[in-house]
Image (cartoon, rainbow, N blue to C red; front, side, top):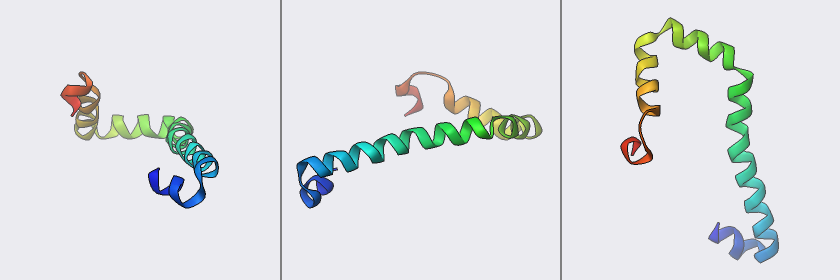
Length: 65
């Protein structure tokens, strides 16, 4: 972010950073919602791998770290 601000001036760098952050946060959400049924089928087919994914999602942020 600092490099974008230095390279493209403050206002344009801010706009580029905000666009990048928005796309970077929403793109995985939309991909996950598109393939939700396929992901659920994969988790049912491979319960051992699914248990690792579920374990990673449990607990607080400190526990996940």
